Length: 409
Image 1: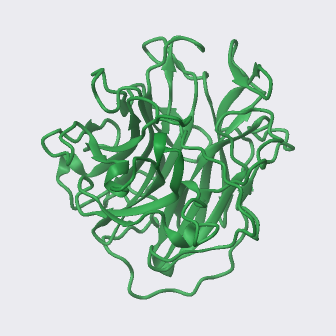
Image 2 (image 1 turned 180 degrees about the vertical axis):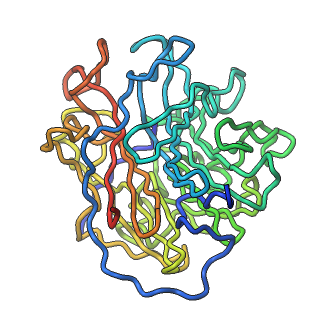
């Protein structure tokens, strides 16, 4: 699950190939040179009924269940006429039993009824010495029609083998795996990895080479104009025991092969709450490229201290997500004095989030519509034995995945 959570206090502050990840349904190998004017933009609203996917309600042929559902990555596949979803599903015999970290793939024609593949797309490395043997999560997938047949689909994910000293999150890095069908993925072999390890393609040290400690996590990839663009949560610290935080925010890197990455900016200054303070950034980015309008849109979490205290569950919560826009994927416009595109609302009878919002949301584009899938904590349809931490102890509750849309039918 997306565990790079850090609270800051800021004053003032078929017939054709599938489309690229989160791209328009028409698809393209390159950016449009004729930009259409932007029409009026609506607001996101929750689609009923929510929730759409509830942890513990899917039984697999091994007799186990996913005790959680988190870190969704959504895309529309034009060729099959269906939605493709990837998510993190901690897999176990029962709630509280030993967990295997898995990344799962599901399909839907309408964002309501989902079919989840029995076999995971990727799971935690079985090698106890591997860099990702404890955590394999936060998937994001891009489709490249020009790649070799067995590498058309690129999956990037967060992995870890322990905790970052003196902090409450893991020592995350980013891994890569490829697939021919977008269902099951194979890690980049160690012989191709810039770090000589299966899957490992980007580390905190790559992005912040002068830091005492650094991590990168929560990748979001888009393939546009022959280039993979990657946005991700980033963190760096220095000093004794890495006590001084120097950088926190969404960073941006690019690649032509999905394996070797060049850092464009870390963190991205125009996404910070205070441009002069490199520790005032957000996390868990989601990005789409709107080709007809030659415009990028990005959503991220950026909460101030205390903003999630009202939520009953206490586990990687978020208050909601902020939206930013850009014409070049470099300089962004974001208004922290405005309102979030999505914020916690426990009032709806079928909200799927009565106990809180789980950090991280993903947005995909289909024609003019924006389709957001996000995590929640709920107290309805809770499987037996499922518990979530609250402010004092635990209470019955379950993780959910829910849908909100903007400018969509």
